[in-house]
Image (tube, rainbow, N blue to C red; front, top):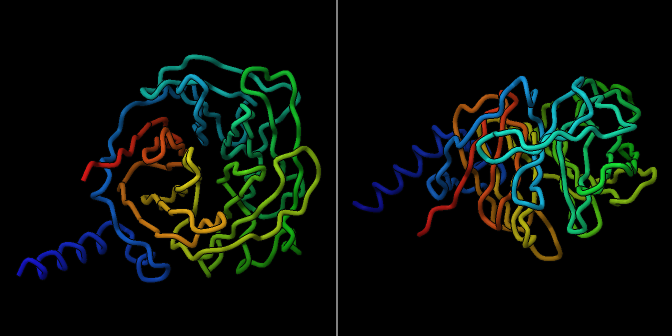
Length: 284
């Protein structure tokens, strides 16, 4: 009887939490109940417009930025959304800033690679030092498998809103607008220069990925989608898709586009309306 009740519970959780398709197609396990997800703050829209990326600051506060068309500015906020600092990034332009990444040396990477129409030829990532924004390095890239600008409608797979730094490389996750629902993982060096972004792997996810991060210990990856967060245990040889995969549903939260690990298990995410949420893993 207990087994039957448990089976029904898991079925209902899977059915209504939005993780059902990913469980069936890619083996994601539904683990929403393992995390406590709640709203913890809100950024003022007149101070931080359209928050679209997050990175953990050295002092454990948060860096964020506005979406396309906003000034080329990084904002430091605390977890409740209070604005602490505004930093203009000189000699840059916010064509479509989508996400932030950070390495162990204190470099912040700004992903100016939003590409809704799949026709950009100036995809780039800016690199600055967290404590000194005067030096701006630029990483230019193109997708090695893109032929048309734009490609046919069934191949609109060259937009991206999510990336992170790992062991000397930047890993970019595509926002797939095509029918096959595959998220492509691209890899480029985290050094100034011009590169072809090659496909390192892919995974089927019934969602469009809007942010990504890797835990400080390098053992977990979190991908943010509309209504769901996908947590992946990193497999052997740094294979991000080879380990166990979990799907967490957080329901309606607006257009969520920023996510960052704050320790090895917990993360903060935000939406364009300025709301800030925290996901904390429950003790067993």
